[in-house]
Length: 372
Image (cartoon, rainbow, N blue to C red):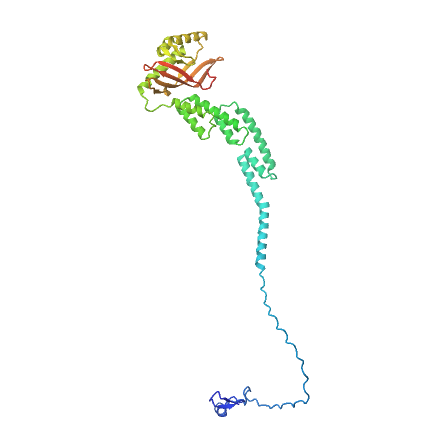
């Protein structure tokens, strides 16, 4: 069978690479040996292999074999990446263990130390109790218990002393130092009473206003706040007060109480109206009867009578519809008792004066019900 020469395209024998013309040309011009057959190396000679004579024996029949089943295609399984989850779990376990150790040792130790420092700094029953409750097996438990017992003993001793004290500052200091003391309610009651006594002693609209403000801000318990408001209303004076009228009212008040203190009949007679509808705890009576009974009472007590000292600067009044004057004035009483002179503060005297500034009614609010 002929094939085309790769150089010139002419037909060539199947066993040669090029046609005869091209082969000669390559030998002469390029001096290159061309293999006689395709696939031979240059210079290699063709060796003819004689075929073996056919065997006269017939070949043994080969038994037909069943075709082997095609091997199943196995899909390679993807290997699970177990490294990252395991590592994550290990990290979490280590962190949990570290936190447990920290919480059980270092953090607990730090909390106990800071709790003890706070208890020592406050040095109060409440502070030691907080430490003992939070750290029942703490290193300073015994010290905290000893400090608590010491403070309890000091509180009891202090309360015995303060039951009779009149020192408001001392009571306030106790409350600051022993806020959780079982004596706290008693101390607060004592403090409130002393502050109220001081308020009654001053007995002015301003003092009652100060007590009200103190009670509202929590400075005292405020057991007397209702009475303080009532007294403030009685003594608060309007800025529009007529100065001339006020001076006349003061003259009547001063003259009457000077006469009453000395049981001066003519003086009392002068400042009382002809008919008095109320004279302290008595009902309607004439001024003659009132002054006569006062003189008899003074003689029976051998002159040991009450002395009345009105606070003229704090007089408060208002004009009524019948042109009478409703008057309130703070008053202090002085009287002898057991060989000593007692001063009682906190009275407020209520008067009604007619248009001639004579007393038609007089009674009083006492600082406490048993006051004389």
